[in-house]
Image (cartoon, rainbow, N blue to C red; front, side):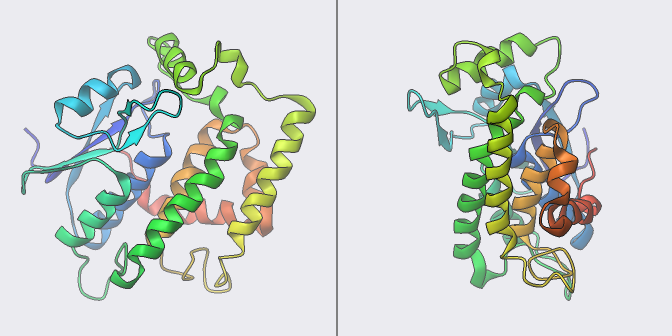
Length: 254
């Protein structure tokens, strides 16, 4: 058995296995942040998409989301299991709070969520999720499924979204161009919050906090699934490409 303090349950892509989903990316960034600034030791347990519900239930992690179509429980990841404290946490925002509480950064090093910013961070998380979710359909056909279970995974995506077939997710031609234009405009509003760009690519300049990891989680997904990723990287004077690149020090996948 590994001596890792925390087991991180992440959604596996098709081979080669890598992180691709936005909420697990938020947690991976946070764990690597703590690895760097606290010395926290964790390891990843990769979970195939068709097994996510089964694994989450086996860990005793209650669903924290509901399906849009039928209102039923939506079992997804991330989940962390802290073996040293006997705790299981199953929501990316709650995981960040937990890590700051239980594994504070070393003196003089950055924290994920300064205490006075928790409410702001919670609202920011909802706001950013809403922006990117609006346009995520542009990347759904590019999700890197495992070929061995791709049809099962696609059928589940269709069920969740109320689509009859996978082909219905395709957005092409003029409709795609229009949606990309709207996407650029929406991210332009987000870019206005980055007022310290003369000091660095993060909201506070040179030092990241959890809000940057929230945006970074979605950018990491887009870097995998969006055909126009290079175009997105260049929007708004290259802000989002610079942010994505700056977070690579926290992007380790074990």
